[in-house]
Amino acid sequence: MEANVTLHVDGEERSAVVETRTTLLDLLRDKLGVSSPKKGCDHGQCGACTVLLNGRRATTCLAFAVAHEGASITTADGLADVGDLHPVQQAFLDQDGFQCGYCTPGQICSAVGMLDEAAAGQPSHVTPNGGVSDPTGIKLTDAEIRERMSGNLCRCGAYVNIVAAIRQAAGAQAAGAQAAGTAADDTQAAGTPTAGTDYSGDRS
Ligand code: FES
Ligand code: FES
Image (cartoon, rainbow, N blue to C red; front, side):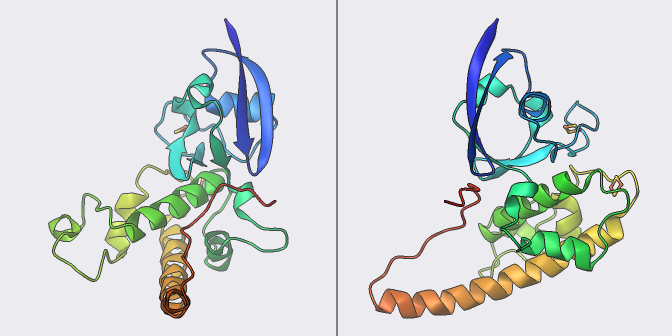
């Protein structure tokens, strides 16, 4: 049995007819030619196929394409603006957070997703007291980063530099949030609403 599936991939509307058993990963790679998400295990265990699905990280090898009709997908490629790398991409370059690079698109999408989760106050398994007793928010220690990225394996073992890259990106995000907070205070005083993070990939 076949079905037509339409997705918004990195800001572009893309459609294909697929068998209903087709995974999102196979639709992206084999039907749409989107090769940024990688097939590692094809069993939900390595994270190489991670994208941002409607703004949240997801392993595409475990998702049926037909279950996500109309979804917005951002791959690691779609995170970059023309001529401008995403801060997480830049941090991976700065910190040498890869060797062969096969796991890297999934690592980057997962890192972007987890930074947003932490910023939203979602605790991990290692967050002290479930994060409820710290009014200053979740501190992204190396233990937090490792735990939150534990679904993304790197066969080259570049973990030390991957953690360093995410530490750098987290610092940049915190500094940006602080600056945005100051600007928002000024803007709200002038009566203008503020907006949240948008990873829809829509560049129009
Ligand atoms: S290919 Fe999807 S988790 Fe490994
Ligand atoms: S850089 Fe080679 S698998 Fe991670």
